[in-house]
Image (tube, rainbow, N blue to C red):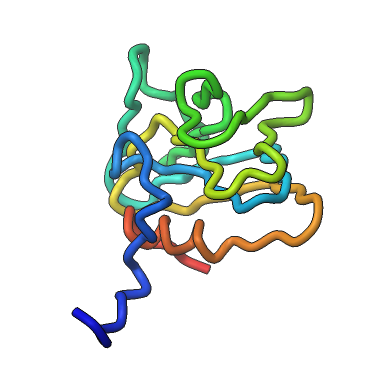
Length: 139
């Protein structure tokens, strides 16, 4: 309805990916390199979306999963051409609404650690909104 404010936890429709429960990486126009993406379960269990064994983690009772090796740019890109280089995963440069799905459904509560290098301004507000709709995000 006109005049109604949208909830801050609703993802803008342009950020849609193949599986709405999966994590995704999104970027607006400038280039980012993801050097590490690690998810640590706080409660619940995550689920791999493609064949093979569930990702093995480390960390004792709080299992950590390295998400970066799970991403296949050819299969998981939704908008834009993501590429791997020796240091990580590169987002396409100059592409609006660039996004790639992480083929993993996170547990009900988790911590997410990312090592990110940006060319230009880095804004993570959309990523935070996406995380809050899929699980509990702690700053």
